[in-house]
Length: 289
Figure (cartoon, one colour):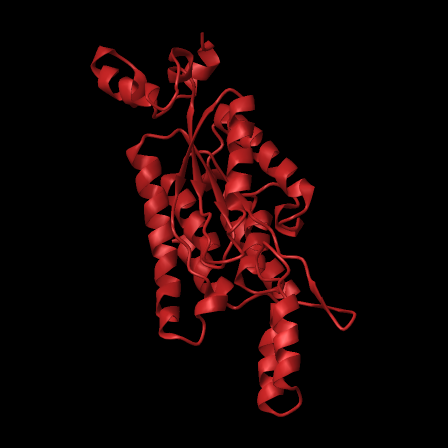
């Protein structure tokens, strides 16, 4: 049986699960494995931006599942759902880049619609690529249910001729090749080793800039922006985030309690201090709005 405390935390999901007239809704939930005890527990949305279109997001299923387990350990019921991503790094220089900023709005709208429509009591977002960050945060701010943001983490560096390299080196190498300072074979060799696996672009671009800003604002756990994608600590942090979200729910600590003017000023200060992406300007404004 659920405790009185658990029942108290069902701020919105009680509309789905309580009373004889909700029997059809409960029947559908039981089809997904929920028990009678689960009906009395808080429902937590896990917005999972996993995708095969970019290394930034290819591993996020693993982290979303860890977040689900953390919620379960703290006596919540997690519900994972997906949304889109666009890779700026892949689409850049093509007409497809027109979809980049649009994707931010689609991400925000889709997370908001599912979390609102399914009457979830709390929200965790698991994100990787550039426009994922503001998209998730816009939804979090609009919904104003207890929430946490999880960053998928950066990719590790590659190795070229004994030196660490990343995607920025490949962009610069294109210019070197055009200038005659690098052969086509050298460019190909660099291309093949610069991105050795999963994780977001290893540079101070939008993803790392915004994940740092979000951490500074207090919407992710300490250290979230700094742990690489393949580091075991990322899985541990994500598990902890699931448990922490349940604590936020117990304390009724909501995003708008955290996202104060001072929080935004702190984020702006850190972005300027570290020389972060100027895209932070339009994204922080969109979140604040």
